[in-house]
Amino acid sequence: METRAMLGAPWSAAEGGDGVADPDRLYTRSLREDLEEARDKLLKL
Image (spheres, rainbow, N blue to C red):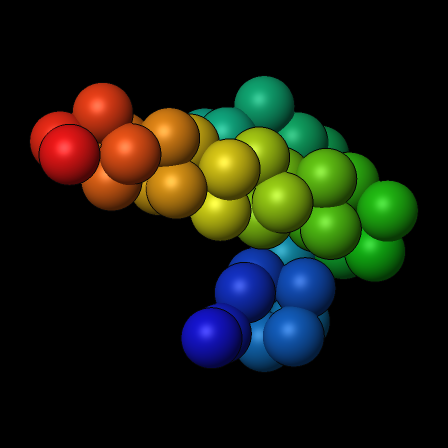
């Protein structure tokens, strides 16, 4: 599974960032997205 942290994508200004890659923020963002995706899948069961 690819995450933003693995891809090294910068935290864009459109997403509330300053355009500077911050590994901790990227990891938190990707983890949150993974959890939301898992929650959505469980709700469909």
